Length: 212
Image (cartoon, rainbow, N blue to C red; front, side):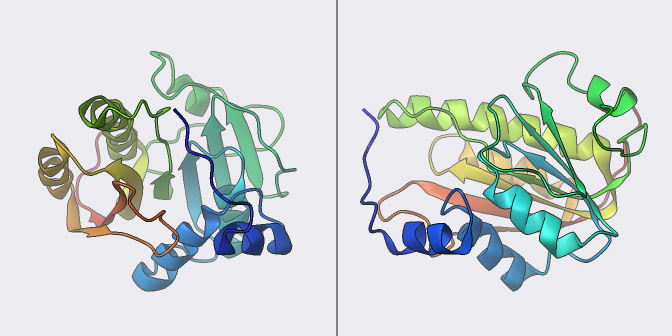
């Protein structure tokens, strides 16, 4: 059963006041301020970008000299900024990487995403069931896919951030991520709900570039 949270929640009210569709923006803001992930001119891939809070934050942070590509199976609740392209796509689909070889007409980005992104972020999470092992397994499927995508599209020394649930298989995923990045840390922003198994994996300094 989906839990209902108070509309008077501090971060929910703050997001509403500041024009963001979801409170999750403050998780990314805290991560960015602590780990210095985003810079002006950066090219960023936002996986699981709906409803659009992270997309807005990133678009403003990288400025008009940067670019943001957002991907989700759901529609946005915002109007994308001029430096932002939204693509409705399932990251688990077999033809996912086709989006980089055939970019949409509404916006522009390099004809190949391979080695072109400075940062990949993923706030993807499955619909929870309340069964810990199942929820963790479903989340790991998405985080593993996010890592696979990052390995293919990140530029050297690029950064990667993904949401993950603590549980069976988590430690192995962290170890796997360490193969590709110079620094990997677990981090739990203040905006994460109390009692949640959610945390974020912060990876900096991509070491390996693969070619499709």
